[in-house]
Length: 193
Image (cartoon, rainbow, N blue to C red):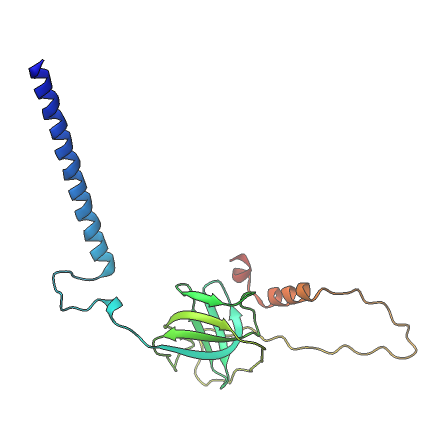
């Protein structure tokens, strides 16, 4: 009986040691991958990590001329077209979403590239401002990589003459009309996305 008890105790101890060894190895692997993906070296405490640098936030205002799932293009008050990547954005301050012809303020970190439409800054927040104004982009001498979608212009319909009998016009839901207007400006890839 004592012999069986000793064998049982030794097997339990071996099992505990094996479990602790596996946990230590797993912890080392997790630490290795964490350091690898963070890009920081814990052996050199004098090397600042990328998150240690605090960048100052800047903002710019403009009118949305194109909006996809991960890109937002605006026209600024001085007529520049700027496209921002919104994939890793912190938050959006808007009740109903981001629509074309909506005036917005984009808070970002980094420096704008004056020679390019596509900006490589970190967008933090997009705030929809009250009211919307349409700003026509200034023609640039340098070719741009991202062209804004055409801003739809309102057209006037001719008024019926006094001799013609006015035909009743079906009432158009303004939400459906706006949705159709947005769909008409989207490319096939944007509609699929």
